[in-house]
Image (cartoon, rainbow, N blue to C red; front, side):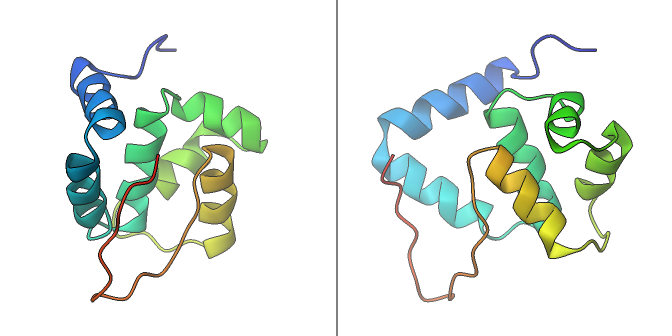
Length: 104
């Protein structure tokens, strides 16, 4: 099992998200365009969690998290909601005309 899932790139992105509101806003705009499965994987990595750790916290097998993160798969929305909450995130539907802004 990997000890650190945050690559230097992930660490740099996390630092930029905290420091630069303009960068964070643009990042969120682009993140909203990718599939939910990819959003989950990105958030997990930004939070520094392995699939194994998320699975353990949700009382499921690592393979279940792997499937949730696989593009073009169809899962119950509740599975993504549980994972998002565990990663201190949330799901939302954002109208196209709304601009996302980071407040963190």
